[in-house]
Length: 326
Image (cartoon, rainbow, N blue to C red; front, side, top):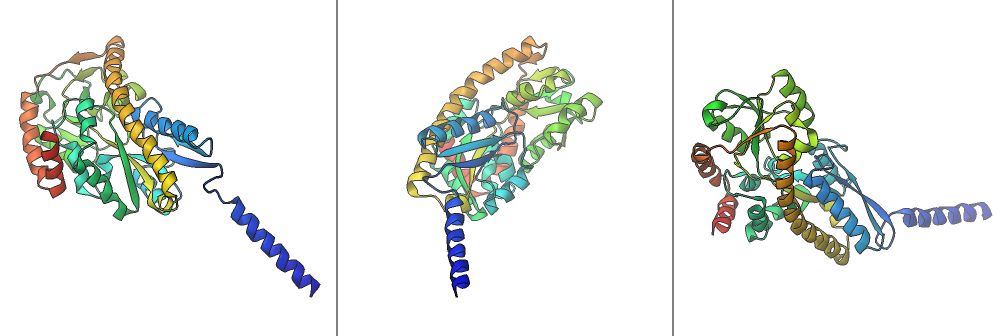
């Protein structure tokens, strides 16, 4: 009987210790935050900004470890980890999320925005928030946006018009908006992961890259493709995501703290990236890149055709476009 009471007591103590060992509010915890970009890129810098802000706001209770450049897996793997609750936070390109919900194509409409500042203002539209809300049905929580900058063309050859791109192999972001855009231009859109772009430019597998300047500077693609055409043809949105499973376990106070920090980071990132657009261009010119301001009239005419087609994909895209253009 004494032995039975002894084992009962041991089990009870073990249960208490097990519960105490679980991370929770009021206790220090380390969250994981995945980004697909290198450390100098605004998506990773934004994640670090959120991490620092949460650590300070929580008095050290919340620590966030940022894992850049897909250290925890590619985007499909990261989304799976978020759904399971094995990962708490991540950044993902809106272009990837468009495969789950076509409303995210709204951010890739050609020539919708002329600058990072314009894209940043669109964050405040009701439709932009509705697009984020759609993610809950996917086991994700959309918390905000970060903009890596406008898209341009980096190439191994001088680019002066759309004719120069005919049949050229252009690394395009792997979704239908980008593929349609480059097909309409007359190029051959080619999907390759980031680590394969530099060697593909060097070996001639690629002729050009559809890219933002943060990525060019961060991964030094210009060492193999020294011509930059400022086409400014699309914006590119990074989406700040949380695991719904994890998010639902938080108190209202903890959620409010996280949302406040993300809202601050959204505003900070717009100004930070606007400055980076200028400094990145200066760095590339200093490093020997030939920069050309191409006549974008032909590009814009093609962009309108692509934009009109994608507006019909989802009523929320039309709603977003209407609010932005108003």
